Length: 113
Length: 115
Image (cartoon, rainbow over all chains, first blue to last red; front, side, top):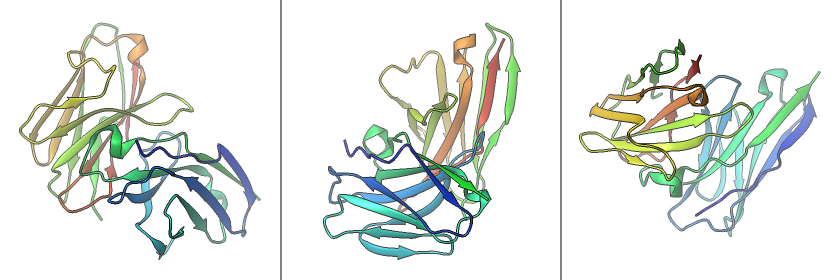
């Protein structure tokens, strides 16, 4: 199983850049890396997905080194509304089952004024 | 973007009754739908995977006779919690994916409280 390891929690302040790193040593060749954000009592929301190198969208960047054994989600200039739990998933949703869809414990990001 | 609608958002029921939760993909055909449950301050736990027209595949430890899943069409999957008990109280979340896309699209979740 391509399990992931993330810090349990992180703190930062408004306007700062936040980087959350996820370890996935057993990532398979066909696996993608996907990050989700979850607010209390809501379903997770897709943030960004990548396979290798760097991916950037309007809300975040994802950095993936050449060996793909880790990835870093970068949130530029965070605000209070970015306080949430962030999950790193590794796998292929099309395969289904725990192999591709196992949620780790996630990282609880707390942004302070 | 792809939208997954989940209803109801909250349900309170008496012990012993059954509760049905619906999950609909509004603007795409979901080849696969997934059901999760989440206890307070814990991560999501995959319960089962369902493909349209076939029986759901349940994860180890999940009772298929208690958590009935029906994926009758490419846009609708239902989860029925039969003979619910207080220990079934949890946050249930569905998600869907479609062919050629590795992302998961999640519903807004259903908070089930069994009295």
